[in-house]
Length: 79
Image 1: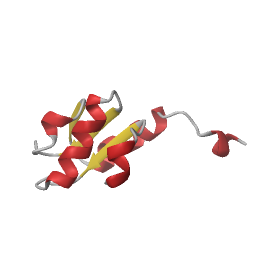
Image 2: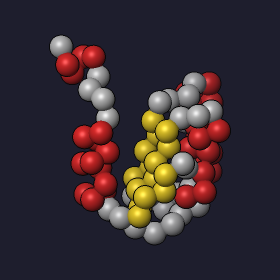
Image 3: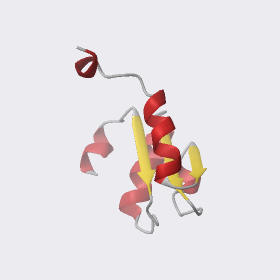
Image 4: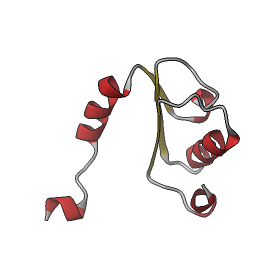
């Protein structure tokens, strides 16, 4: 959490959380404001839904495989 105050990750995934606590919502909102790709995966809307660019409704089983498939391979994974 503290690290996210200083840097902006390329991607923030919130998966299967009720997002009831500020320490979950605030870093996601900050990353969205800084231009990071932010995604929430949850069957129901949460407190974080408004703070992410893509609030996806469904389960991790439904959404994670296509998201991971769409991500570019890291240089270390390709070598």
